[in-house]
Length: 130
Image (cartoon, rainbow, N blue to C red; front, side, top):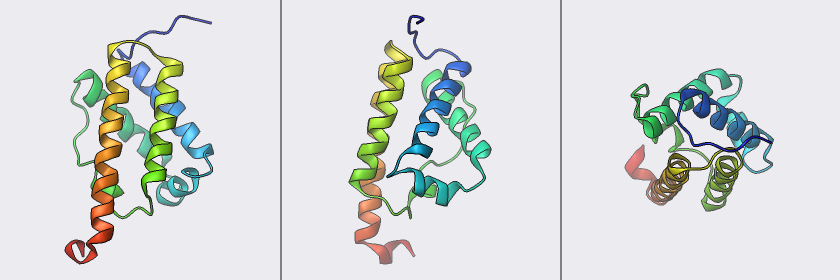
């Protein structure tokens, strides 16, 4: 087994994203939600995620967009975000070590928490978002 390294290149980002979303697709809780939303557009989704994480972690600004709106109406709750973060953290820990790996987990946790709270707010205030 080779020694783990940090997340430093687009190749590392692609390994992280591909491994993570393979696990998402196989997950009993999250897989059906992603399959319903993404359908046969996985290559486009993965490319968007490569660019997102490349921008966030490597500061190579290839992503431009707003990550929250596509998630706003998903049928998800706290348990989905917990599972998403568990799978993400496990993937990072198995593949990488170092400052960027730590940052990736921290950023994923912050995003999951923010999305969870925003979606809960929308569910509790539906008339504000029609």
